[in-house]
Image (cartoon, rainbow, N blue to C red; front, side):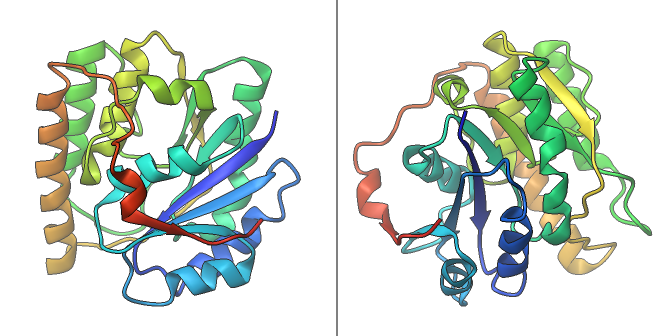
Length: 239
């Protein structure tokens, strides 16, 4: 089974190349696809130089749309999602890939170690955990994690939410479709905002997007590829 890693990115020129270099060290990975979601920096060129295939939006649409674009473009049977700022933590991806290949889970989710220092107050994570439990009965320890692995066939059951609600939506949709989820401890680290103004603004947007995703789960429609999506993106060749 071929494995492809999808890296959605927005203004990640400083970290994207290093992340890709670590992904390329994994013999399990056959394909690397970066979706540059309208970056104003050199994210796309850095990703191409590092050896990834790049699809880019002409403007910023948000993570949900970036993943929709990726799912149209990815060619592998196994899909792995990874944030652009993970860097050396990408070497931990095999911990997500192996359980799916063995048939122990249909979707794996990376559970990060506790953050260093004070971050937020846990409100956003708490709402996400509560929403997932109320809609599916699943007690999530890593409800906001964007690092995941699953078979491509699962995509047809995902009604991807826009923005920062996409991870919560994916978890709920996969569980409702009857798929088995497994949270896997990994040694990865995301960018930490701390208790700063930028951090509180970021978490505020997360809160709004997650609430919207939870409200949308009431109808539970399946995601379909937009007919006009091809006008939103350009593509380059790569690994």
